[in-house]
Every structure is written in C-alpha cells, then in structure tokens.
Amino acid sequence: MGALSVHAGPLLGGIGANPELTEGGVILRDIIPNSPAAKAGLLSGDVVRQANGVSLRDLGLQEVIPLLRGPVGSPVILLVDGEGIEQPTPVEVIRGDLTKCGCVQTDAWLGADAAALSQIQLPANPTKAQVTDYIAAIAAATKDQKAFSYEDPQIDMLAKVGAENLDALLAAPASLAFYVAEVAAEFASDANKASIIGALKGNMNLVRIIVERGWIADARSILIDGLRAHPNYLPSQWIAAVASLNDSSTYGDLTWYLINGQDRLRTYEALQKVPGLDLAAAVDAAWQKVNNVCNVANRTSLTPVALATGHADALGMAVGSLQRLRTDREWLPGDRQLLLQHTTATGTDAEIIQWYNQNKNNLVFDAATAKFRVAKS
Image (tube, rainbow, N blue to C red; front, top):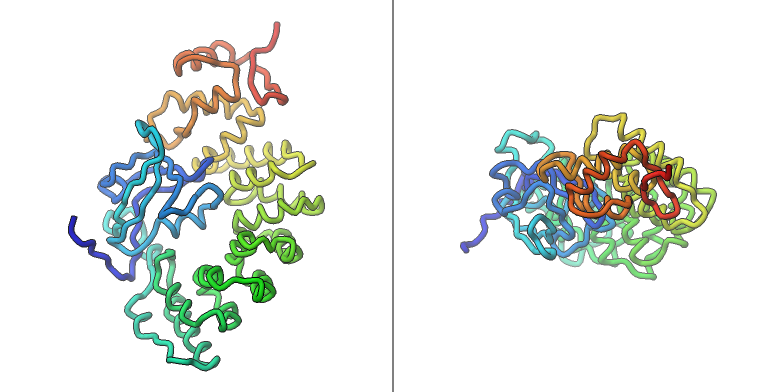
C-alpha cells in the first residue's frame, strides 16, 4: 500500500455515513455510495463500538462526530459489529471529501485553516503576554471554523504553552473550547483542579476531565446549575455526572433532558442507575415526542427503551424491523434479541412474527419481567 495523501484543509474529511446512537456504540445509517465507508466494505446497519481505540459506549453524538472526522486522506480505525461478523472487527476507513458527492454543504465541513495556523509561532521561553497573544492568534484563525476533529493542529499548538500556562488556556476564547478541553485533560492534576472546575461554567467540554478525575462532588454546584439552565445542548457526560449525585432536587431537570434532550438514549442509560427515580412518565413523554417529530433517528434510538417499558407501538416497530433490510432507515440493530428479551415469543424470526400477528390484540405488558405476554383468557 502506498503512502496516504493527507490534505491539511480547509475542508475536513468524513466517512460518508450518518451515525445514530445505539446501545454499545453508534449504528451507521445512509452510507453514501462510493463513499469512504462504502469503499471500506461497511454497510448501513453496521454498529461501531470504537473509533481509533476510543469507546463510543457512553458518548453522545457531539462527542462521536469529531472522532469520525479528520483530514482528507487520513485513516480512522473503526471497531465494527455487523451482519456476518462473528466478533467486533477493526476496519480502516480513509476519510474523504464528502462535498464532492454533492450531498453535503461545503460550509458545514470547513475545518482548520492549516495554512493560517502554520504562520503562528510561540516564541522560545515566552512571557505570559506572549502566551496570551499566541492563544488569541490561534483563536482568530479558528473563529470561522464549522467542523472539528481530534486530529486538528490546534490541539498540538495549544499544548505547547505548557501546564504552567493552563490559566491562560482556560481563559481562551469560546472558538477554542473544543481544543482547550483536550489539552486541559493532558495537563489536569489535583494541583490545578480548582482552576479547571472554575472554568467548567464557561466551557462544558471540560466535564470530561471532571468525570475522568473523579471531581464530580467538587464540581457539584456548577454541574447542577448547568443542568438547570436547560441549554440547547448538554454533554451526556454532564447529565450522567449529575445523575450520579443521587440528588432528588435534580430529578425534574434530569427527566426534562430525557424528554427534550438530544441524546435521549444516553440520558436514559444514566438515569436508570438513579435510586428512587421513576422514569415511566418521562419515557412516555419522550416516546410521544419523538413520534410526533419527523426524525427517524430519534425514534429508532429510543425504540429499545420504549419496548423495555411496555409501549405496544415500539413492539410493533421491533417486529416490523425483522422484516426490513439492514439498509432500511428503520431497521433496528439487535431486533431479534430485543424481542426475545421483552416478549415470551420463541423460535425463528418467522415464528416470532407469526406469534405477534396472532396475539397482538391480546398482549399485556408485565412490568416485573419487562415482557409482553399473551393475556390469560
């Protein structure tokens, strides 16, 4: 294999598939013909467990997407489960320029301006003022960027300021928030814990450090205040961190995110662990909301939750999935396993479908076993 031709920008490369949250990772939907994903042999319906060694199990979409993106021509190694794959298998995908297929907007893929960034240099033995100017110059070169990747040059550039200048880094403009969190994670220690927690309010990406370092209790008030502010987006790790506090005063806000948030599946997984929190009404409201909005991804990602909590229409969707192709937008990963887990049906796919068709008007949900069964006559 020859050397890869990696292009430094300004457009980021992608794999050519829409990721959707599922248990254990993300499912790939709508793979573009002749895209990098298609060329690598991936199929719609494949489930990605890891990207470049990073588990996707607990990540929301906002955290997953930068892992899949990167310079055009660069590789990303995906750990994939799929049809005919006996165990998760690594697949190398070479990221490509998706704007050439005419199915994505160019502006949405504007990445790091490597040419402009290459002109920015940090002097040797810099003063605090020079460090601040250096960070400001990087921010100015980043302000129009629309797409981000963990392989962007800003991460290595900001790391050059050193842990001794973490205060200047944490005070960086908002355009650098994504990169600051990555570099701060490198520099984080108990010695600078207070500074990182103090900056959390202005940069929600720092929550990753709070969780990894076990500083949730120390950041309690900021985490709870951030939850109660109901921003348009809150990282799933933030929601899980608040949930881990088991503070009953937060339960209403936590369930609000289950109903209205972007990553409902991850929110539900976090809230399941909270003692004394009844999720039935919130799941009902969330399920009703996703069914009233024309967003198939929201509905399919929440279907396993709705099925496990007794929603008959979710059962119908899971049975319908058995009859769909994997490339169908409403195909559910693990549909057969879900049905065996949450019904008393047994046998082949055809037998499960037959059981459902014969009994669908006479099924009851047993909350104790989380199973649909045929009502006794």
